[in-house]
Image 1 (cartoon, rainbow, N blue to C red):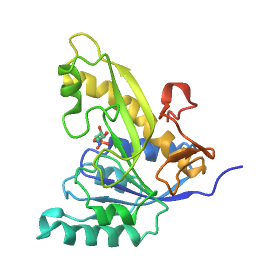
Image 2 (cartoon, helix red, strand yellow):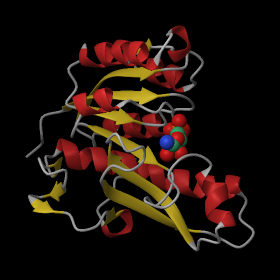
Image 3 (cartoon, helix red, strand yellow):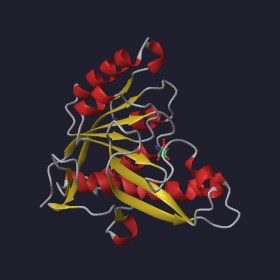
Image 4 (cartoon, protein in one colour):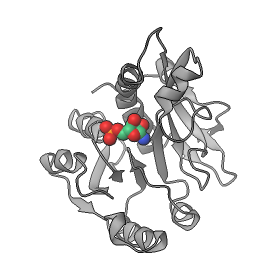
Length: 223
Ligand code: GRF
């Protein structure tokens, strides 16, 4: 049975390649979503043009125009809620979000992070993975909680770290996987397979998920 398209709002800050992956999977008929809007906190985000090209409504809520975080987040949540999304996707959204904002979207906001969380939360993950001598690196999709990059992870994609990798080479290898990981994670939510239960545990097909699913062992999207 084809699930009803999931109403989604995507938040970005920059390039938008993960947004493009979502758009491509939707266009290919592989992702049952209704991308109602793309919202950026940066007016110059390249991803805004990608959204416009795909005919998706775009909004800019420029964080520099607000005196404090509360004002910015109020405007941001008004812009999101205007579209009544069932899911908010942070796809390269580079602002830390406050506890009230995060609570409002509890269980319906996910983020993609370029590391195998809980390793390397925060910025500059690829350089840090190389410097730490990691043999494997990757990306994670998690529900967003007030703990930055600390919410429950439910899907990961792994890549090898090769000898002499530069951070840029490693980032490119991870990004290729991100473009499969994020649409696949959204698909699981759209299909009602993944949810955050009232105890803050992720359930997959009704059962508590002991560990994040590894993309390599799943029927992952590639669009
Ligand atoms: C990705 O690496 C994502 O994991 C991180 O920010 C980057 C965004 O890239 N949160 P793009 O804007 O989707 O191209």
